Image: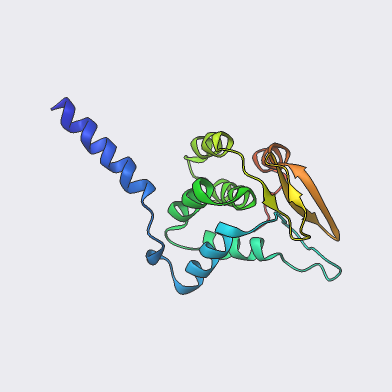
Length: 156
């Protein structure tokens, strides 16, 4: 009986990790695919016109999906660092009780170098960000702290 409980629990965890993007709407799938590879993090108006970044627009679309939590968890697990930060912000926005677990997983992921939009190689513990007209390279942990401390609350 105890073995059966453990097997069922293991299956539930495996099913939870096996998110299938086909459950998303057409717009949700596009947002999901874009967020997986987004290479900079920007919330709020950017550029001279104060435009919404692709990442923020994609996150808005994805947060509105019925299966948003599954999609965001997968992005946090598999996306490049900027994507993971967007996903964690999304999980915080939808008030997922999984946020702490996903943050621990994000922090434990192996480091990887990323190429910024301007062609520069970003150190593995940093991420390209943009605020207004300013593009920066910041520590991933600093951006994550802003997310967790509520700096971006109300972005949606």
